[in-house]
Picture 1 (cartoon, helix red, strand yellow):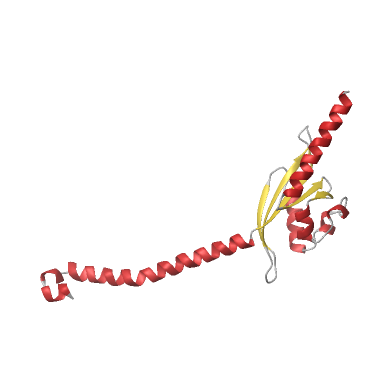
Picture 2 (picture 1 turned 120 degrees about the vertical axis):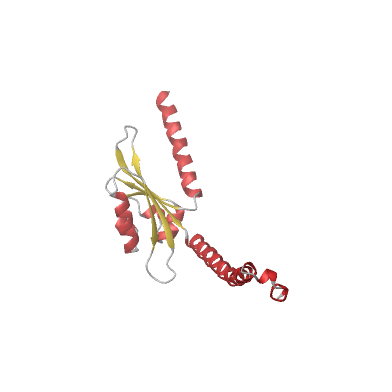
Length: 170
């Protein structure tokens, strides 16, 4: 009857949610109101070096080893009702550059029951932005020298060299 129908709907939605989480390339951590892990996806397990099934019910700080990241995630959790986005450069050589998004998790009445944290590694993107900025800087520097020379020649012509055929030609 109605109960079976509800159960099937919930099972289908659960399967869809699991499929979405599994297929995401970003690390996803779902926490309850006390900051304990409800679930993490495969990408989060790889990123944090933990087994996704083994961390359920454990406090966030036990699961997230880099101290800087654990502190940041706790900060995101404490941010209240607003979604937060943080740009994080973890300390240490070759450490990844991360974009961390945190959003409150609400029940059907709108009460906050936890949080969802999504972590993206944007190291490659930041590196490309740095390369682009260096390229633009180099190009503008390289163009400045010939433009300065041309400007000097134009000023010389405007200052009367046009009437002097010998100087004008040079």
